[in-house]
Amino acid sequence: MNKYIFVTGGVCSSLGKGVAASSLGAILESRGLSVRMIKIDPYINVDAGTMSPYQHGEVFVTDDGAETDLDLGNYERFVSSPLGKENSITTGQIYREVIQKEREGKYLGKTVQVIPHVTDEIKQRICKTGEVPGVDVTIIEIGGTVGDIESIPFLEAARQFMHDFGKKRVLFVHLTLVPTVSGGEFKTKPTQHSAKALLEIGIQPDILLCRSEEPLREELRHKISLFTNVEPEAVISAYNVSTTIYEIPLTFAEQGLDEIVVRKLGIDCKKSDLRPWHEVVNTYVNAKKIIRIGILGKYIELHDSYKSIFEALLHGGIANNVKVELVKIDSEQCEQSDDIAPYFKDIDGILIPGGFGQRGIEGMIAGVSYARINKIPCFGICLGMQIMVIEYGRSILGYSDANSTEFAPQAEHSLVCLLEEQIDVKAYGGTMRLGKSDTLLRKNTLIHKIYNKDKIAERHRHRYEVSNVYKKELMNKGLIISGVTFDESLVESIEWPDHPWGIGVQFHPEFKSRPISPHVLFISFISACIEYGKK
View 1 (cartoon, rainbow, N blue to C red):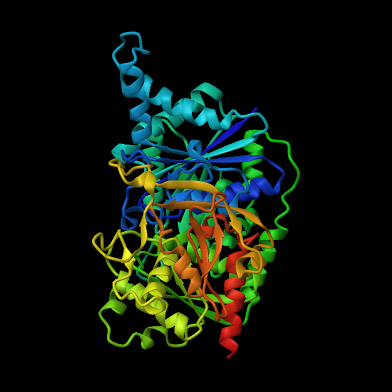
View 2: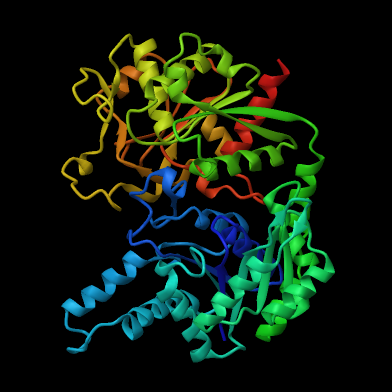
């Protein structure tokens, strides 16, 4: 029977529940188990699609078009199980469904309450994913921290799981903080209080993941065990790793986390085989050469805004046996500078990521022009590709006012415009071109050589596209339209002529990159950056 593992957090946010849950999933998969991941976000938004990147970081998009929290990106990078709309649950979704059922009279006149109606809806959503035939373990990460008022219905639903299914099917993993004070002394009191707060809700944690700067000493683990009623061996030290987050599954396995889980849940499975993760970490650690990639974006203040791109660049570096140094370049600052060359000093490649709105756009255009003229490897993703087209229209076609209708609705030469189906859209949540879509690649192009395929499937998230009005003119002036939709109505990828590596794509390849299987576009981009660096 399927097993359920609930991962909760305490003391403070941003301790790394997503990476911890993903690492646990990776270890269990390495033992031959089929794992499913679920993220619960207690906010009232229906999904993350309308949120600013400064609120929750990037919006991660699944094949079926779900706009989700960035933790689902961690799940995909660590665990091979499929993800979709059912793997992301929010308060907004739950209450919307409950209210809809009430309006349709499905509660037969009963007073609709948090218990049982809301908690039942939560449990049904979890079971819909977890009770699929062939699934062995479902890991549910509950966002926020114990004590947050928003999380209470979800924690109560988790408690009811234990009541409904029993200890042989349900396990609670609690991630907490063991801070240090002056002199480097560890303090266990926050962890004790966090476990107590969880117990007050009716949940006794089975395993504690104790976040700390350094590995916890044995006597500290025993002290925490004594005050939280958790077995000493089940107090796991979730310490800061010195290399990469992909080392975390290895540190958990070294402490026997997977053995504790399978023993407590009564799972009979093979021993773990973590050789692929050892290979990833060893390659990263032993890489001697450093490649510097400039990220020319508008949300660079928050690292998580471009989380998947940063990770995909790291994966490309691992595939090429180099370390990637991320150089964050604020496009607004480029916009206000008379000389942008210093921003790109000692840069081996430039990547322009996605985004929305007019802020910083002129700085991106200037940076793209600098990359094209100076033959620097350049990778434009989504908005980045549109910027490459706008710059080409200004510099090569001679249209000084070339722009996008998103930024300049009245511009005479709109080389990028709103998709036809988006023109009358009034509700912005979940209405973009979202999810997996097929692209035809032109033979004898660089991107076709990289993929070595005629047809590819990648994920999209956008409202604007290259205007077909200027498509022929752009091609006549040398721009290579290297990828299109099946009906050839939309441009999916472009390339610069007479350039070592200048590719723009309308889709988001970063969402499908994994440390164990890096995306081919990022492998090729980093390889081109290495060659440029040699010069």
